[in-house]
Length: 96
Image (spheres, one colour):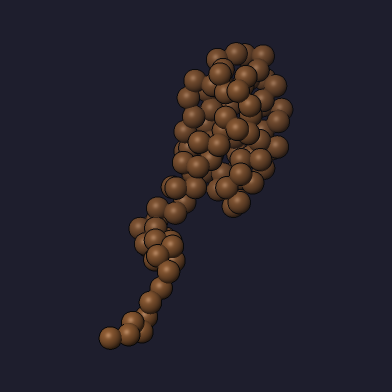
């Protein structure tokens, strides 16, 4: 018996993720995971917490001077993080 509607497994997985609305959540988690590689180890060491809420990456920074410096570079951080997953997932980076 020959299969008539055979599809590659990656297409099936992508379709299932989209159907369950998990594709965006997966990309959000990739952005959180990519934070250390985008900002480097020194800044990552000062990061105490990262999470995404309402399409914005919220990052808690332990150092006030570093927090102020990162606030000035929010747009470039947003672009770099979205570029790391190849899609616009977050709209802003909130530094706390």
